[in-house]
Length: 243
Image (cartoon, rainbow, N blue to C red; front, side):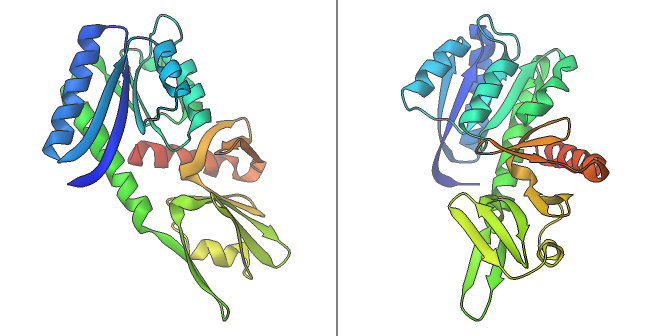
């Protein structure tokens, strides 16, 4: 898929040979897709954080789990707080960390011995998700206005009297409809009720701790006990399939 948009990618690995191999596999795939890219390698977590402090930003991170100064999971937590829309891919031989990585919304886990096969798969999956999110939207259509809201821009929706309030990246939108009516127009792949008065966009979930959802923008929302199992399953399915 040809693209004029520059993709910025950071690779963090203290093993120079492994880092170079990761970078080369990334470049090979993006070249084949004619995607403009900037791939930078960092030998430690501190080096990356220093670069980010200097106003650099990256859409995709390839992180080694075992880093000398700060492990990959701790680094990922810091990255997610800065930008929930970034994609985190762990390079690891230790799959016991998979459950711990749930809270940082890890996109993929790639075994070190399968870089050539799995890196293109991960990058292709990111393209797929971005394409889906860019194309889908919710329409508010009343006598006074017609407005399209991209799915990707909706963080969550809540009930306020007889209105549904859409909380987005650029502010709030109101529509005089019940949440049930709104949900019927949304993709069940992307959205889920967390209790009768709230619908969340799974794309913007940072993590789930107990029954508390952490959303983009440091927003915390409680999941009702009766819906907790369904919410966990939908988040897991979304991350597994689209990540």
